[in-house]
Structure formats: structure tokens, C-alpha cells
Length: 431
Ligand SMILES: C[S@@+](CC[C@H](N)C(=O)[O-])C[C@H]1O[C@@H](n2cnc3c(N)ncnc32)[C@H](O)[C@@H]1O
Image (cartoon, rainbow, N blue to C red):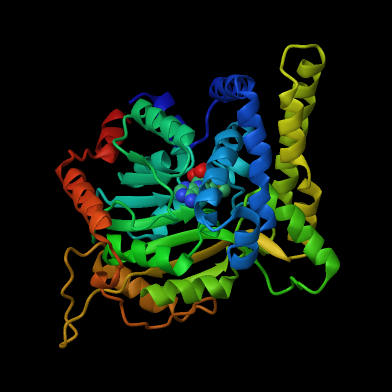
């Protein structure tokens, strides 16, 4: 692996790579058909809805609303990932501010390093990433801890990009096109040493059910790290201005559900997880300085694009896409500064080790070391900590129909027969 490959794996690309990424995304957007542009615009209908209001979902989208939401999500993200890549958000998330001297990319890198650390992984761990974007975070995880990552994404376009990029970086990560609202996941029981997700659970219809699936596929003792958007206590649904801000923010960040810090804790605990800590991960709880930077990037990209449209070098649909995408960024900044919402709420939890009657672990294959257990007990004295001992739900409780079970078994044998390389070793040799 070359030094350039290593730099790429972190997600801190050089100028040439940034220009190359932006150029490729421009080409993809230029070649969109009128139908694809229309379906992107129409996909926004889902952001006026909420998973919690099933009646409204059915009235707007019909009885098979879940499938319709899935179609909208694919149509939306197929275009959005390219718009984001042009505006330097190839990893499609605004990170928490971990260091106020760093920008978006620097803070993404720091946040991802913190995931690799807090998961307390064994060597050559297997990790699961739901809503894995273009697989750039997965590549960074491989670089950081030699992980072999399985990434799941509803959008075929991003899955293809993730595969190509990880191959280029010589990481043997796997990427699967799958809607995580269609359960079960095609993954074997007790397979992964850790799980992370970045701003994807809010697109999930039934978080307790998905959390149960994540629980099923993890080894006992494995940890999970989540970063997501939430509405905070200051948000008052009776306040018309708050409601208006929320109406503007949801389409911009692409959120269908509206979790709260507490609802997510409840959902994770109901699946059997033990919460280790949960907190707003950004310094001072605000992301606004990074949101201002993103607004600046997109302002420049929009200006350059519109100039090219005006002289006939780009098709007119660029204006339609950029206008729709970038509207309401001020509402996002105001809602963040008013602490009504954040997109960087963080939860760390673990699947308890299975105990027998004598209290001795009878785990299949422990995912983390004894140190992990000690760190957990110290974490529980932290003021942020909200540790609740909930009985672990049985893997057998996961509802599976016959064909789904067959799918899981098939995935199980193909995953376990696959040659798993140790990217970190490769990285160390190269370095
Ligand atoms: C807000 S972005 C999060 C960024 C992402 N974690 C990354 O690494 O860049 C949400 C991601 O979840 C994916 N996604 C959305 N809904 C999904 C679903 N129902 N099933 C699977 N993936 C989904 C999107 O395609 C997108 O990549």
C-alpha cells in the first residue's frame, strides 16, 4: 500500500483526490435522466412524514408505505451522495466538534478514531456498519484497527463506490445493498465484534426491531457506538416557530424519524443492550461552526455550478438540484444554536456477556478483553452514564420466517468461508 493509499483510507484526501471526486460527481449529476431528477425531487415527500405517524404515512403513500419510503430513500441518496461529494462531504455527516481548530474532515477523522477506541476491539475484529455511505468510514476503521467491515446501504450507487474505493485501498471489506427496514438482516448470529452507525438509525422504521437484529449478530461482550440526530428537550412541538424549523431541518438532514436521547436508550435497552454512556458528543453541544463551514462550501459550489449552467456548460437541472438541496441551511444553524436538535448525539452500549447460573460467562467467542469489563464499571461512575442492567434477550427471540432464515444461513456460510485478510498488518508492513 502506498502512502497515498494510506492518506485516502483516513478520508483526508489530497487536493488532486478532492478535485477528482468532485469531477466524478459532477459527471454523475450531469448524466442524470429527467426521470431521476424528478424522482429525487419527489422523494422529499417522506421528510414531511414521520415514522411515528403511521396514519399520515398510509394516507400519503398508501398501505405499502414502507416500500415507498425505501424507494424514496434510494432515489434521494443516489443523487445526494454526489451533491455532498462536491461540497466536501463525501462522508455524509457533519461530525461532532472534537477539536475546535479542525474543520469538517479533521473532526470526522477524530470522531472515527474515538469509535475505534471506545469499541475496545480484539485484533482483526469484524465490524458492522449500517447506512455505510460510500464506505469511506469503513476504510478508515480498517486502517485504524485492522477491522474487516461489513457495510449495508440501501443505495446501489454508494455500494458500488464503497466497493471500488475499498478495493483500491486493499481492504477486504464487504458492502451489501439492503434496506435495513426489511428484516432480518442477511447476517449470521453472534458474528461481529462491534457495531457502529453514523446518522442512519433515524431512517429506521422500527428502531427496537433493528436494535434486536444488531444484538443478534453481535458476539456477547461486543460494543455498539451510535451517532445520530435527535430532538432535544428545548424543542417544543407546541411552538409554531420550532415546528417550522423542524419542518425545514428534516429534509436537509434527511431524517424520517425523530428520536430523542431517551427514546434511543429505551430502544437499545429493550433489545438487551446495556447503555455505557450517552451524551452530546460535540464541544459545548453545538455543531453550528461546522454547519457554517459546510454552508460556505456549498455556497461556492452552487455559485460555480450556476455560472457553468448560465454559459451552457452544464444542464439546467443542476440549478434544480442545488436549490432544493441547499435551501434551509440557515434553519439548521438556528435550530442547532437554539439547542432544539443536534445531529451528533452519541450512545455507547454493549451486549452483555451471557452468564450461566453461577455468573460465569458462557460466551460463544468473547468480543472484547477483560479490560473492557473494567472500563465499563469505571464508566458507570461518570455523570453522563446511564447504565441499566436489562436481561439479554435471546437470539432465538428474533422473528424469522423460513425464507429469511434461509437467507441468514446462506449469508452465514458465505461470510464464514470468506478469506479474511488483516489489513492492519498490510498497513504496518507498508508503513
Ligand atoms: C445521513 S447518511 C450517513 C452517512 C454515512 N454513515 C457515511 O458513512 O457516509 C445515511 C446513510 O444511510 C443510508 N440509508 C438510508 N436509509 C437506509 C435504509 N433504509 N437501509 C440502508 N441504508 C440506508 C443512506 O444511503 C446513507 O448512506
